[in-house]
Image (tube, rainbow, N blue to C red):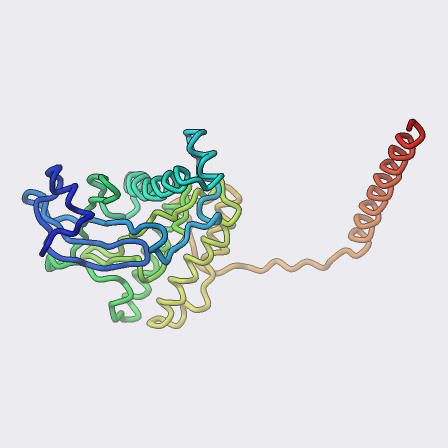
Length: 289
């Protein structure tokens, strides 16, 4: 096929020899199958921010460390340079995640190169050598649904043990090769320890997958892995060897009304004392005028 304009710099640099076909057009990027010497790889061309349907809101960028203070200030102000820097940071996050999570044992595509806003990575294929299907394109048996769900829960735990939450995980960004699920699309991934939305995003990721798999295996609809995983994480007990069941015991204890009233009374007294202190300070200032 004709070489897309955004891929021309990679051809000129010798990073790509030819473009075989377009694989998909997603909400944030166009993806192509390309030939690199004897290898067939995947080229992800990021769309410009004004042409994307996926928005980089503060829920995703919160807690990300920008080492260059000038870039950080420009990004905060929203200047032209700042917007450009924000785009670069958004794209570089996916590179960092592919490398970081890959080394942590999470099944993600292998990273090869990044040039001129294009990410070169491994092409995931099925057992016949064809492009691997997305999870959403498969019709699963109940047994397969349970197997794939269990596999992805383990990968989510691996990610969280590595300090990362995908943030947009669903059946649409999971590929399935001969060994099972492979997680893709990571520019919005977040730092679990530095983001106030971590629990909500983890819960959404897990619930998206559980809801999807429960179509094929209805008993999954009653599982609550999100609460269980988060409890292990918060208590410092999360590990890849954690025995997860998806069942959360509800501990209900009777409320001690007397204790609650005492706490409320103490808070009110403290607030009243603070108000008296403020009034005294203002009265003192007025007397000095």
